[in-house]
Amino acid sequence: MCGSVAVRHLCLSKAVEEVIAADLRPERVEKLARRLMPEKVRALRLDVRDVEAVVKAMGEADVVANATPYVHNITVMRAALRAGRDLTDLGGMFYVTREQLKMSRDFEGAGLTALIGCGLAPGVADVLAKKGSEHMDEVQSVHIYYGEVNFTPALYKWSFRALLDELTMRPVIFRDGELVEVPPFSGKELFDFPEPVGTRLCIYSVYSGIATLPNTVGKGVRLVEAKYGFSDTERLEALIEALRALGMLSEEPVEVRDVKVRPRDVLLACAPPAEPGIEDAVSLVVIVRGRKGGSDAEARYTLVHEFHKTWKVSALAYLTGITLSIATQMLGLGEVEAKGVLSLEAAVEPDRLIKALKVEGVRIREEVRVRREL
Image 1 (cartoon, rainbow, N blue to C red):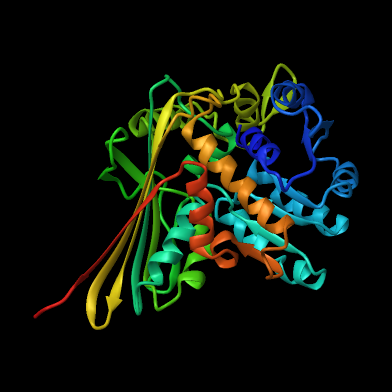
Image 2: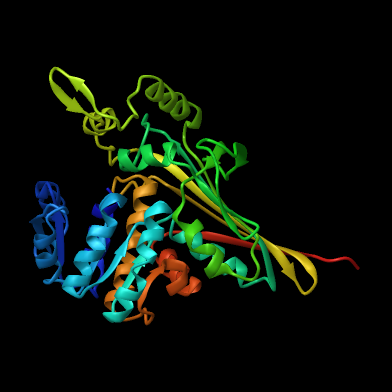
């Protein structure tokens, strides 16, 4: 879904001559291309697990955008190294992100750049955290809140595999100079997002930015945390607990009619794909607290977006896809000078990204407060 938004956005850019849209099921791409610019989009059947084919396909492009599920990120990065191509992706849910960052020396040595986490959260959220830190002499904490409300009944709007991992893996927060694991569904907090998202029950998320923000924000930051408020967090928690109780989250093989299978693999195989046309609204709130000139300071960034009626895609898919496209074009146009593996906020000036998003109808509100005693 996010990849199709990126394809559409890339097609509309005058700077882009051709988009090679590779997918395991290219008929979806072909259908999209017919509605857009058939002369500008070339559909290609490609299995991301076929490394040789991926390297060959990359060789035909100037820059590569990876919108596959995060579990393929390392494979795609290795292919990009072999093909000698710059790369963007949508993030690695902390644990994979840390493995990706270890490849920085390889990319730097090859004179290449991999921009990782180029979506909404991770991505835009982290860039806003970096911008907030620019108002501070000293940063004490960074709090990222993502909230959503679905007007079309739906349990999930992105890869079920990613969602399942997000709800079952142990989230990580940065606290007092250390990375600390916390239990899934912990950190519960009712947070008031702007309407129409409203109040959501937020929980700690397995978030890529925790692996990069302590360094990119710097300034002595002591706490970095990210919480997600799903459209129905309580229902998701009940579902996960039911699956766990039934043994469906186990990775230990069980025998079924003389065939050994892992219950979790069966679950992933049975889960239907997310629907692209879910009508929704999403909000992102980033709060940076610290000190400025000896006084307490707070920078708050708020973004609200609703279902894209023209493109008929969810707000989440739209915001994620256009950010991936913008970052990819920055790489392709040589606007990112740094080499190696970098998070979006480490490589792109916040105001440049905010300006590019504003052109696409994305409005971000900034509030900076400094409290001082007179």
